[in-house]
Each structure stands twice: as C-alpha cells, then as structure tokens.
Image 1: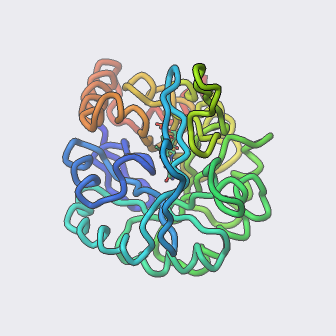
Image 2 (image 1 turned 45 degrees about the horizontal axis):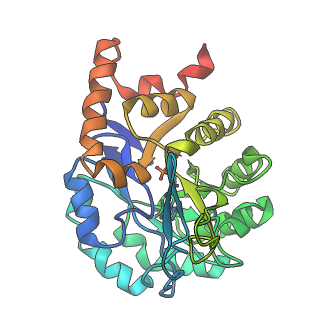
Amino acid sequence: MLKSDILGMKLKNPLFLAAGILGTTASGMKMVANAGAGGIVTKSFSLEANDGYDNPTIVKIEGGVINSVGLASPGVEAKKEELKELQEMRKETPVIASIYGDSEEVFCEVAERTKDLVDAFELNVSCPHAKCGFGSNIGENPEMTYDIVSSVKDAIKDVPIVVKLTPNVTDITEIAKASQDAGADALTLINSVGPGLRIDYQTARPILNNVLGGIAGPMIKPIALKCVYNTYKTVDIPIFGVGGIKDYKDVLEFMYAGASLLQIGTSIMYSGPEIFQTISDDLSNFLEENGYKNVTEIIGLSHEL
Ligand SMILES: Cc1cc2nc3c(=O)[nH]c(=O)nc-3n(C[C@H](O)[C@H](O)[C@H](O)COP(=O)(O)O)c2cc1C
C-alpha cells in the first residue's frame, strides 16, 4: 500500500527522516531506519568541519522549537566514514545526503567525494540561521540558486539532485522554477521558518546564544502546506513535503497538496523514532478503508477537486 518508486529509490514507505535530527552518526540513522523510516536524510554537512553556534541552540515554543544549531557538522571526510557504515542499510532504506556550502565549487566537491555512497543529494540552500554566504543567503536568490544547482548537476551525472527551499521569500515558486530550470530532480519544501526569537522573561536575555533561530514543528505546517500546494502547480518535478508533520492526517494533507514524499523532524523529539511505524500503519489503514490501492493515488488530489 505504501510502496513507491521516487528518483530511482524503491521505498517501502514515503516517510523520511528530515535533515538535522538524528542524522549525524551512522548509529542514529540506523536506529531511525530500524524504527520504520522509508528513508534517511543526513544532517547537512560540507567540506570542512563546523562547530556551529554555542549552546543553547534549541528552545521550545508552543507548537514546536526554535533552533540555531548553525549547521554544526563534521567535514566531508569524517562524514564519509559514517556513510560507509550505511551501505548495507541502503538496500532497504535509501540515504539522501544533505550538503551545504558557500560556493558552486564547495557544493560540487562535497558531492563528488560522496556520490558513490548515497542515493541522492539534498542541497541545503535554505538554512535561516547559517553564517553569511550559506543557507538561505543563497536560496532567497533565484540566480544564485540556479548557478549552484546547475553546477552540481553538471558535475554529478548519476545521482539525483534535490533542492531544499526556504519559505522565507516573497514567492517560493520563483525559486522552485529556477531550481527546476537548473536541472533539479526534486524539491524539498520547506526548511525552517523565520528566523524567530524567544526571550527569557526573567532576565530579558534572548534564550538562544545566536539570539535568532529557525522555527520548526507543528506550528509551521500551514506555511509548509501552502508552499507545497502553490509549487505543485508550477513545477513538473516531485515535491518532498516537510514541516510540522506529527501524524498520518498531516501526511494526507501534504500528499493531497502535491507531496510525493514526506520528511519528519521535530515530531521525533516528542514521539520518538517509533513515529515512522505509527504513521505508516495509520496511513495504510486509512487508505485501505477509503478504497485506495496505493499511496501514490492521493498525490495532488486537492488540485483535482
Ligand atoms: C534541531 C534542528 C536541526 C536542523 N538541521 C537541519 C540541517 O542540518 N539541514 C537542513 O536542511 N534542515 C535542518 N533542519 C530543518 C528540518 O530538516 C526541517 O526542514 C524543519 O525542521 C521543518 O520540519 P519539522 O517541523 O518536521 O521539524 C533542522 C531542524 C531542527 C529542528
């Protein structure tokens, strides 16, 4: 019922781990795969190691969290060692490497060095709290996004390229089209929203060391859904939906809006990795009870009504 084939990845279900949550070490990613995820997106990494911001880097808000981890990650060579340990797992649970950089050269080099170890790349041009020149500094600009995507596409022939976009723009469909024109094979919508702020009411100090951070969790779901819904009508490539998914009803909404594949991040912090099995079971039951034969039948349904 949940099987699908996306970008050459044979999936037992379309529910992936989102970048940044439990995707740093091989053991964390295997744990999520064993808990029932259909696929894994790694924590974003680049050429060099990056310590990210000092603690505190994450704070709870109503309906989610604000984080300013700042793309903390080992460099590509250390990450390769983790990826090598996932090669057996990849036969059942595909792995998408989330990579970032501040230039075409860096994106291409990271991709070149890891392309034999992964099923696809997700280009993170959308982190809202990355240092200047990285993340949403690129993805807010259609020309810069086009240049990065087309150069990675030129350099990497056999591995699909997914582009992860920021919602923090006037018109996300413009960046989506630029990505598609540059050769993207799919889009991931959305990275975290904002940035946003929390202040300690007793000390009057901002709680995060970096002051601002990206907003994630159920409270951003309506924004993510809007981005998927609007973009579905303007591109021909698959859309991966992410933002606030916590149960099978959220998955249904994203798929009706046009997502072919879903990613789950913040809700794992509240419900644990078992969330993948729970949502898979609930989704299968819903589809069966409503007369569907395969989950792919509901993609974009809202647009046909
Ligand atoms: C603690 C934390 C770390 C994250 N790190 C990354 C990252 O390294 N790369 C990336 O593309 N997105 C990162 N994200 C964004 C998520 O992948 C996702 O796009 C966003 O949180 C919305 O999904 P959610 O509401 O299910 O968490 C991070 C989010 C959180 C909460």
